[in-house]
Length: 168
Image 1 (cartoon, rainbow, N blue to C red):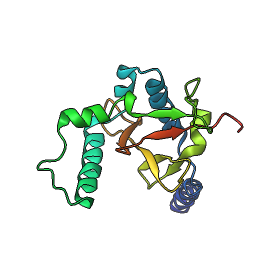
Image 2 (tube, rainbow, N blue to C red):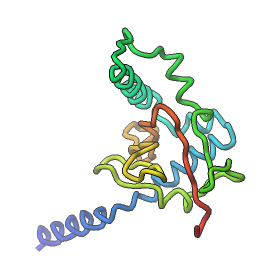
Image 3 (cartoon, rainbow, N blue to C red):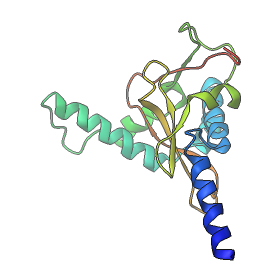
C-alpha cells in the first residue's frame, strides 16, 4: 500500500512538472538577477550567479563563434574578457517596444518568459525567438546555495531581455 502511494505521488509530481512552467524560485532568482542588472548592483548580481559555470558557457559560445568563422583562438577568451561579458552591463533590459525599462522587472513579469529546459535547469526565453534561451538557471547544490537557483549560462552576445508589462 505504501509503495503504491509513493508511486502515485511520484507520478503526480512528474505530471505537474510537465506543464512547462518553471519553478517559482527560478522566476524569483531571475527577477533578482535582472533587478541587480537594472540597478547596476554588482554585489547583488554576483549573488545570483555561478561565475565558473557562466564563464564555461560563454567561453564555449565564443570559441564556437570563432570556429564558425574559421578562426582558432589559442586558449579562447581571457578570464578578464569573460568577466566583462558577465556583468550587469551585459544585459539590456527593454520593454515590448524596445525602450529601456523604467522599473526593475518583478517575478510576475519574468515568470511567463521562463521555461523548463530539463529536470535540473530552467531558462529565460528570448521574447522574439521563444525556443532560444537568454539566461539559464540551475538549482544550487553547495551548502550555501542549497535550493537557490543561480545563473549558470547566458547568451554571449547581444543579450537583450524583453520584459512585458504585467497583464500585457
